[in-house]
Length: 198
Ligand SMILES: [Zn+2]
Image (cartoon, rainbow, N blue to C red):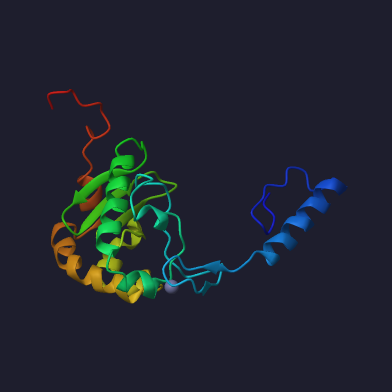
């Protein structure tokens, strides 16, 4: 069971646990507003905002301070360092995915990296645009509808996301007209250890 703050309450029937849960939810209400890593302005904790999670840049890198930092979408979209930052972020995902037994790489070009989780409990595609780095999730059952009209399936996309997607959608429609085409692109050998010569 989860309380409002997202903490797991193991046995809420205990008076002590109930008190702790109440304290945790009060704490959540008192949490300070987030600050944008680029302009310093406030961001509502519930968003929307962009955050590149993970320490994917070496500590000395001048862009490392922006890892894990919440950023206004508008600030992020017009940030001159964004393409470089996003590229590092996507590359880290590509690398991590090679060891992830659930997500399979199905497509990669200079603008987008697509992986698929075909497990019945998930059945999703994940698109990472190199221009932005964020994760756009599409249920495989919605893929065809999404290709035809992204906003009908993913209505909360930001203007910068729609702009970047507009560039890649024509080739996705051509290459993966159905969700079956996506799943068929899974390479069963992807997760096998590669020999040094390969
Ligand atoms: Zn900002």
